[in-house]
Length: 275
Image (cartoon, rainbow, N blue to C red; front, side, top):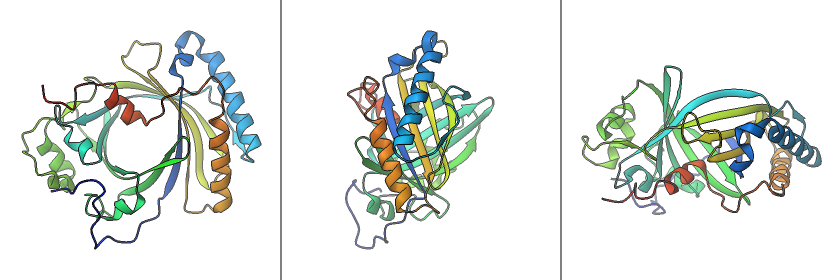
């Protein structure tokens, strides 16, 4: 059975180093209503490029180019939120006929990645990442991903078979899984900016829509990331400056700042409560 979050075991291993850093900034989604999106993207592109220039970061490309559209859904136990209560996230991303399931363990403490609280800790193939949200708060995660068929994850037993580490949840295999928010969201990804931060550095804009025909998104997130393997302290400092500059975009930043996952749970009142 998983231990409560924050309960560290004495046998914890040294904290691992994240393989990548991703900086995430929620923007006002009302600005990206489809009728005026071209003008909005052009303005955001100009402001982001200027912020990069002031931060000493090379900015190549454009946010005005659509990259991909896909369906995104998060699964959990309705009325209990078993996964969320154990710091786990189960995400499905679908494009055309292909779906990828990703299981993530998330924590604000890097040291927790190497404890028994994290069921993925012994999985050498699990990617370890750090997400940063304003002003400069860190959320660490380790994840595993596998291809799945439509409807394959209907119960916890299906999850146990796909990711055996989750059997430590110790709940009945027949317990059903449901989509948080009742239906998947449509995600549009715009732009692929190359940044000279470490290796594999890029920036993009993600828009989430509640329904397939909606024109105004419920979430707009500007993010940039880089692999840390070959980076040095100067890369991290320039990334920090860029993040701080982007947070100063007047009129673009809503007062509420959280991750996309947290927003989806928060906008689904009652999902985690017994009827």
